[in-house]
Length: 202
Ligand SMILES: Cc1cc2nc3c(=O)[nH]c(=O)nc-3n(C[C@H](O)[C@H](O)[C@H](O)COP(=O)(O)O)c2cc1C
Image (cartoon, rainbow, N blue to C red; front, side):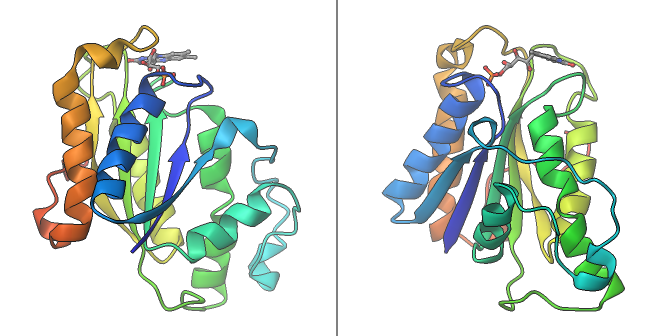
């Protein structure tokens, strides 16, 4: 199983990246292959709604997202690690999601199946500063449809509230342990046994 990991915070070595790295440590211990991409190191535009993908089945914008399309298509699991910004996700994560419009057009307008016959799973690792009941609702709902556009399925995620200052997640080793355990389980257990939250309003 090949894992494609997205680090979606502009903060380098912040809470999100620490959480993602704990997950990837578990993946590595389980013998898995992964590639980690830091979105804020890349340069790509959000969708410009030109509509070209409706008949071409691919995006006409040529930028750093061009490479990410292929990385997604050749992976079996996409993990998006992101902080919550204004009850949603940061702008680069949204730009990444919007560019899945090219997959949506290929799937729903042109009726193509996944180019390599895969059904990728998608999982979220997310955190935010407050304790808001609906803190992760927008992110989960968006990501569910992003995975559907990419011929995939949303499996669930791990969600942590009350994490704000840089590195504060280190005060909660149990959260990092959960992420590491999930990373390991992905290789040793069937998907329905992965210890993640499947609720759409986690
Ligand atoms: C622009 C911005 C908007 C934010 N909006 C929210 C929010 O709506 N709700 C919340 O709980 N935390 C919010 N936060 C706090 C971050 O989610 C929190 O600091 C998180 O730990 C940052 O993770 P990082 O270190 O990986 O960047 C916001 C932070 C920033 C910079």
